Image (tube, rainbow, N blue to C red; front, side, top):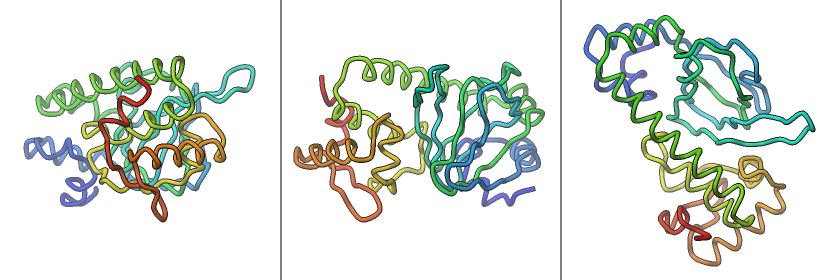
Length: 224
């Protein structure tokens, strides 16, 4: 059982739970660490956990039959994912890979379903999360088909600053250019060129170990 203060720190959804709900959540969560480039789960796996990112960075995507890698989204600390697969009791439809050393909180299926059946606050969080996720993926589909490389990088970075999906994010994002390339579906060199272009336009600032956001709204709408 994880500590109460620790659960409140890693899971914003826990703040509104009642006493019994909070204790059930504590009892149903374990933690596990993954090395950089290690698979957390693969498409087709029966991975029976709702998953939170405690530290690190996770790429959600898949590989086509032709061997082309497709990235759906990246997940930073504070993000929770996999509720759809747990709700539907189905195999995962994507790969989840740790892009750097990553620590995850894993809630077992039984606890998740108990909260789903008994907690109004938990259900409110899930509805908000699913709504944001649908909007995010609609945006990803749009910019993946219609925008150039610089705009894709801008939108990719902007998605990591959604306060509902990523509540722990700060204006400084610890992320490498290689990781941005992986999330944007391009090489590190191309990602570097795009980042320099965005910095020149005053939308972000490249810093040691990551970047700082200067104009989030312009990043979100870049290329329109």
